[in-house]
Image (cartoon, rainbow, N blue to C red; front, side, top):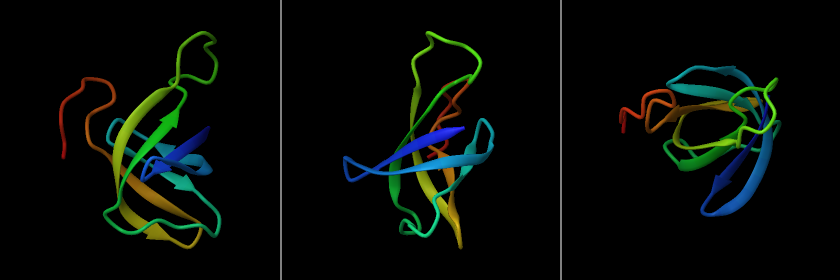
Length: 85
């Protein structure tokens, strides 16, 4: 699914989530990368097949950097709201 990542309150980049769980996601960002341990806001749809549901916005930390993307860990479980960070 397509996602938007905000870093320092700016619409930094658009990416594509390759893997998502309740704890985090890996986002393909191409050549653009983010600093390790940076706090970001990530916006993504809850379900791609359901219309009328507003996108989810979650705070996350960059916990992995790779050649073509970043691994993000959510600060809260997106299903239950339980805090991680």
